[in-house]
Length: 253
Image 1: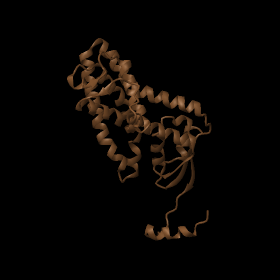
Image 2: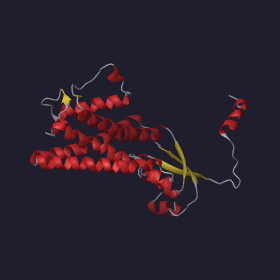
Image 3: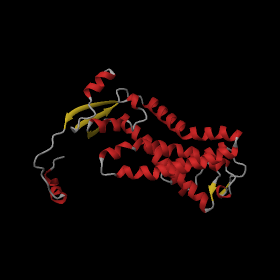
């Protein structure tokens, strides 16, 4: 379908509620994993390398930019995250991709500050004496594994990095990294994997469908299909959930 046909068939001013299905025609799991992990690593480490290159020439300027960058990211997240729970459907869909991207990029900025800041508040770690950016990257990976494995490595004291937070500010920075990993990388990967491995169904207008598509990193590999028009019932039937659950005994397995 050409772009002209898309514009003709999908009218942004159409307020009708439709049933949509998102799916992928080619379920290449290895390609999917490689592409998503590569995109996530690129997005998270791009700010780190930009600041690293700038810091090799102007270290003070790079560090000031890093702190301002991190402050801006945190401010944006504070503003955007509440919209994920907004009553308005458009507001809920609109900023999902922004939260993923900002949180993921914040990881690289925080890593640069930890690795190259001379501030005492960033020195509250043990095992970081003379640590290079690579060693701090292993610390980042250690926290990533902790988040993914539900802190099981912490319970058994299994760590691949010798760096551990020892003082309050160091603990706060470590918690920030874990928050960025959770609402950035983890949600990004789960959202993308679910749409590739299973058909995803949702209900919304054409405008909401466009915003929904904007939330996928690998949108070029996905297709979306409008399958039905949702008709509202003129006289909706209403019941207490507890009363409806009484019908469960009539269900057949």
